[in-house]
Image 1 (cartoon, helix red, strand yellow):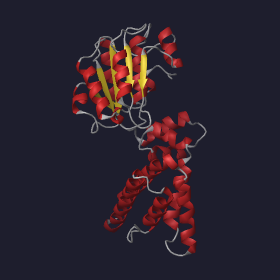
Image 2: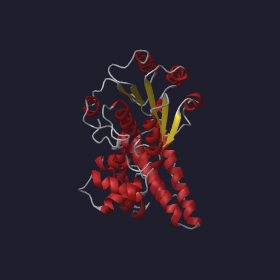
Image 3: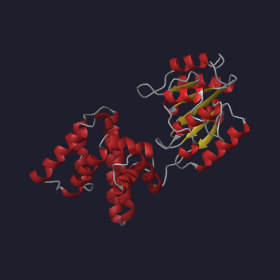
Image 4: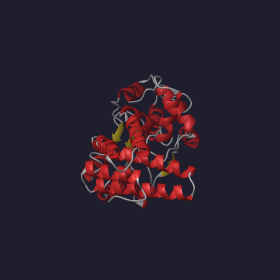
Amino acid sequence: MLNDFSFAALAGQPKVKNLLARTLGSGRMPHAYLFRGPDGVGKKFAALLTAARINCAAPDDYSGCGTCSSCRKLRSGNHPDVVIVSPDKGSIKIDRVRELCRSLSFPPYESVMRVVIIEDVHAMTTEAGNSLLKTLEEPPENNLLILTAESSRELLPTIVSRCQTLMFYGLSVGECARVIGQKLPEIGLDEARLLAELAGGSPGTALTLNNKELVGRYRAVVKVVETASAVGVDGVTPVLETAAALAALKEDLPLMLGLLRMWVRDLMTEGDHIEIDIQKRRLAALDRAQRQLDRNCNSTLVSEVLLFNLQSPVAEVF
């Protein structure tokens, strides 16, 4: 679960590290944190580092030692007082939150403090959020809740107000590429920079893109859009073949749409007024495709229409 126990291993996020260092050093922890920021920039990692430091028998500065009993259990992923709640099939339901809240009424098994990490709390149902709110309003002793979310827009304002919010940000392309190079020494600098750019400065997202081989497929889509003609057999055939490959991505198709959005936005920064208008139409086509997928429309048909619209954004195909 956790291999490096030093906050120095958390890439970027200087304000987060400074704030946590002061708080951990003082020993005066809030009852709940909200770690907010893009996916894949270290929110869960920071939460685990915090859990390690709090219960470490021999902490070094504000990091866990990595060798005591508590740290070893955290390393192996079986620490009884570090609880991780993640979305199940896209949401966190009330039954899971009720079970969690009941368990918090009991003292930690063996540690100074129980640390509960609730990932992607924006995926909570309204009922689950209201159940969690009761615990936040009357926090049980010796428990620290760390919530993570991409944004606070989908959270109950009362939940946000009862947490200390720490903001996480995407890394610069150079810093993100450096992290990727450390994790993937087999790839070159150019490939690492491309992954960093496509991932918006998120090392976690970049690693996901690499594992799923989406970069190669993304390049193929861009090539078809840029070079194929929208009319005639020579133009239609590669579009249909590429659309079939897109549809085969299944649950990863929305991720590909996100990559294409970044490509289009980059083109907008380089073009004149006419070019910007074309890219706006492309963005609209991508948004429309996402809405159609959300309505469970046929993914092959959605992909075909999308590619034709990306090729010829002036004459949109609906």
